[in-house]
Image (tube, rainbow, N blue to C red):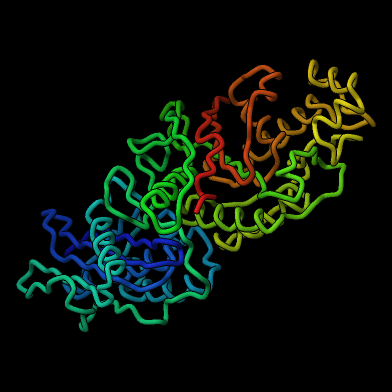
Length: 457
C-alpha cells in the first residue's frame, strides 16, 4: 500500500480578505514531490483557506491512489487538532469543510501532525503565490503541477476542473468586511496570510519576537507597514512550548494573557478596578478585541478561554471567543484590584485628595487604597492561587486569560521572581498580549510582553 505525505497551508490577507491555499503531495518512501496545488480563493478567512488547502491535498492524493494511506502535516494547530478529533468544531464555516475532508479517504487512513511553519515552506510558498496573484488581479489563478505523467498546468490559467481542483466559488465567502491589515511571511519579503511564528510552536524559534525590541509602528491601511504589524500580531499569540524547561518536563501549561480593550476610562488613565462602575468597552475597545481575536485565530493555539467576571473582560473574551469558536469560563480570581475611594479618579486627583494614602500605597504593596480597597499584596495572593489552580487543570494546554492590568503584571512579576515594586515599573497597553509557560518543576518562561501590534491598522 502506498503512503503519501500531504503538506498544506492557506492564508488570508485581512481575515477575511484575499485568500489562497497551497498543497504538496510527496511519496513517503522516496520523498519525491508528486503533485502541487495552489489556488486563489477570493475573499475568505484564514481558517477557511487552510481547510481548502487540506481538501486540495487530500483530493490530489486520492487521485493518485484511492487505496493509499496519507499523513497530513500542517502548521495550523487548529486544523490538525480539529481533524484529529481532539478539538470540537463549532464555527459554522469550518464544520462542512472538515466533514468534506473526512470523507475523501475512509476513516483510519489519514493521520495528522502539527509541524512548525518553517517546515511547511513549500505549501506556504504556493499559498503566497496564489494570494499574490489574486491581489494583483489574477482572480482565476490556479496551479496544478504533477510529476506522474500528467500535463503541467501553468499558473494563471483558471481553476482546474478535475478532481482535486478547488474553485474559488462564493460558497466559502464569509460575511463581513476585510480588515485593512495584511499578513506577510516572517523572514521573507513576500506576503502571506499564514501563521508567522517559527520554531516548535513557540515564539522562541528563528522568527521569534521574544528578546527583540521592535518599536511600535503606526501603519496606513493596505501598506507594507501594515503587513509588518500583522506579522507581529501573529507572533504575539504563539504559545511557548520550549522556553527554559528541560525536555523531560513535558509540555508546559501556557497562559496567554490578554488585557481587555479600552473603556471610556482607559485613555483618561483613571483608576478602574473591581469596586467602581464596571464600565463596558468603548467602540475603540471593541475594535481592539476584534483584532486581538483575529490574531489569535490566525495562530490557532488557544484551547480554552478564562475571563475575569467584570464587564469589560467578559465582553472582550466574548468577542475573541467568537473568532476561536470556543466557550468562556469565568474565574473570579482574575478580577482587577479594588481601588476603593480612588475608583474613577486620575493619579493626579488621588494625589491631591489623598496624598498620605497614596504615598503609603506607593511605598508598600501591603497598603490599601483609601476607603478599604484591596492591597497589591492581597491581589498577588489571589492571582497566585488562580495560577496554581489553572496550571494544575491545564497542564500541557494553552489557555487564554482575559484579565486586567494588575493581575497580568502580577503574573509576570511572580514568574520572573521580581520584587513587588516592579509593578510600578511596567506599562501594559489595552488589548495587549503576553504569554507565560509554566513547567512541571515550578519554573516559568515569560514571552511576548505587551505586544499590541495587532491593534494597528
